[in-house]
Amino acid sequence: MAVDTGRVPVRKLEGGALMPAIGLGTFGSDRYSAAEVATAVAGALEVGYRHFDCASVYDNEAEIGQVLEGFPREQLWLTSKLWNDSHAPEDVRPACQKSLTDLRLDYLDAYLVHWPFPNHHAPGVDVMSRSAHARPYVHEEFMATWRQMERLVDEGLVRHIGTSNTTIPKMELLLRDARIQPAVNEMELHPHFQQPELFSYLVEKRIQPIGFCPIGSPERPERDMTPEDTVDIEDPVVVRIAKDHGVHPAVVCVKWAVQRGQTPIPFSTRRNEYESNLESVVSDPLTEEEMAAIAGIDRGDRLIKGHVFLWKADQSWEDLWDVNGVIVDGHDG
Ligand SMILES: NC(=O)c1ccc[n+]([C@@H]2O[C@H](COP(=O)([O-])OP(=O)(O)OC[C@H]3O[C@@H](n4cnc5c(N)ncnc54)[C@H](OP(=O)(O)O)[C@@H]3O)[C@@H](O)[C@H]2O)c1
Image (spheres, rainbow, N blue to C red):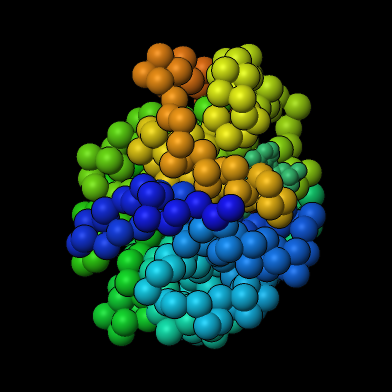
C-alpha cells in the first residue's frame, strides 16, 4: 500500500521551496542497469516517492525520463548534477540541457556541481586510475562554472543550484563570491560518518544537507571499498534499535537521517526495501535515547574517498577533503 505523500516530511529551503525530506537515489553502482533503475523509479512513484536524485554520470537519465513523462510536474522534486567533464563555462548549459532533455523536463528543482574538481574517470575504473589531465580545486575556475550555474537559474532552467562533495573552506569562498547561494549541499552522511562540523555549518548557513550513502552503501563499487571501512548496518547499536522496532538496520539509518535534519536519498531496486525506507519516515520514530545512541557511533568513516579524482601521483585521498581546514591545491608552496 502506498505511503500518503502528504505525511512525508518536507524541508523548507531558503526562498520557500519545499523539498521532500527523503528521495530515491538512482546511482546503480555499476551493478544495476539503467532499465532496472528506471523500473525502481516507476515503483517508487507508485509507493509515494516524489523526490529523485539523478545525475548525468549515472547514465540512466533517459530511461528515468521515460518513466517520469506524464507525471504531474509540480508534484515532483528532481535533482540532477553537472559532471566533472563539463565544468568549462561553455559546457555547463549544454550539460544541463542534456539532462533536461533526457529527463523530459522543462526545469530541474536542483542542479548541483557533482564534485568541486574538473577531474573524471571512465566508468568502472579501479581505485588507482588517474586522469592525465586531473587538476586541483582552483577557486577562480570553480566560480567561472558557478556563474554559469547562476545563469541557469536566471533563465528558468533550474530552480535551485547547489554543491556536492564540498568542504567548509571551499564553501566559505563560494558564499563570499556567489551571487546566487547554494540551496543544498549533497554529502556523504550515515551513522558511521556524520560529519558534525560540516553539517552544523550548513544548517547555520541555511543550506540543506542532502545525505548520500545513508545506509553505508553496502553495494558500492569495488573502487570505493577499502579494508578499513566499517559497516553501519552491522553496528551493534543500529542492530539493537532495529530489533526493538522490528525493522531492517537499513531502515534505522533512514529514520535517523530524517530525524536528525538531513535529507537522505537511499537507493534500492527492491520494492520492499524502498517502500519500507519511505514508510519509515512517517511512522514509529526513534526515541531521543536512540537518536543519542546513534550520535555516539560516529567513526569518521568516509566511504566515498574519491581517490580517482586526485591530481598528483603521491597524494592521499585526504587531500580532496581539506582536513586541516585549508584547501589543498596542486601547486607546491
Ligand atoms: N553526490 C555524490 O557524489 C553521490 C555519491 C554517492 C551516492 N550518491 C547518491 O546517493 C544515493 C544513495 O547512495 P548509495 O546507493 O551509494 O548507498 P545507500 O543508499 O547507502 O545503499 C544502497 C543499498 O542499500 C541497500 N538497501 C537499501 N534499502 C534497504 C532496506 N530497506 N533494507 C535492506 N537493504 C537496503 C540496497 O542493497 P541491495 O541492492 O542489495 O538491495 C542498496 O543497494 C545514490 O543512489 C546516488 O543517487 C551521490
